[in-house]
Length: 267
Ligand SMILES: C[S@@+](CC[C@H](N)C(=O)[O-])C[C@H]1O[C@@H](n2cnc3c(N)ncnc32)[C@H](O)[C@@H]1O
Image (cartoon, rainbow, N blue to C red; front, side, top):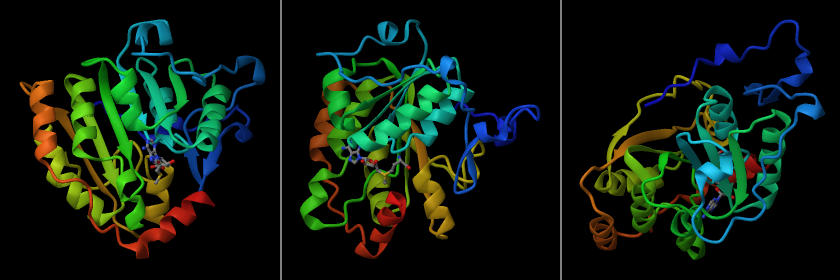
């Protein structure tokens, strides 16, 4: 697993203007807001038909990292700042959160990140070639508490087969949630496609939380469940799909008492 430098490394140069560091719940967001002439354009407003050409998109060949359901993209911004040798694509279905994420990417002058409005499953199914992505991250996918919305849950057996297909051999998949029911389900299905292990405790690169939702859950004293795994070798696309069809859908009880987290996240 590629580790990030410790948070201390993002402390601003003492000579720089403190206002260029952005904080959320008191926790700095990586990078610094540059003067407007240094801003870049990180929005991918229209996804091309068919599969993305990573080299054409970023103008170079580099490991590709995806963040699916990125929210305000705190994780992706940090990864893009701290790992300039990696290229990143972060997506969400909500245009408003992608607007915030894009502004952050632009203002930091990042050239190794793009943001797009699209569902995680649709991105993988329609726009990502097999075996081309180094890491895929899914932090706190929406639990969807109401029975009528259960079919919108992102982590399904079919989605995991698509993640496996998109990853390069040995590529890594990261999963994290604050929802105990979702975690029980993830632990049941993820090991079918990945050499999946739980990550005890917080990520060393972000002890206060890699993402906005993680920070909110930790501030509420709630448990956060983290895991990652290498895509299983010698598991063909056909076999992965066959295995996916035999696995149960994510119909767990997300516990409606936890809905307040969604409200806090929107604030
Ligand atoms: C609980 S938030 C977590 C956001 C961020 N990953 C974090 O940890 O702070 C879940 C996000 O997933 C997005 N989302 C819901 N369904 C999605 C899907 N099918 N594909 C991509 N994003 C989705 C929501 O719009 C929301 O921004």
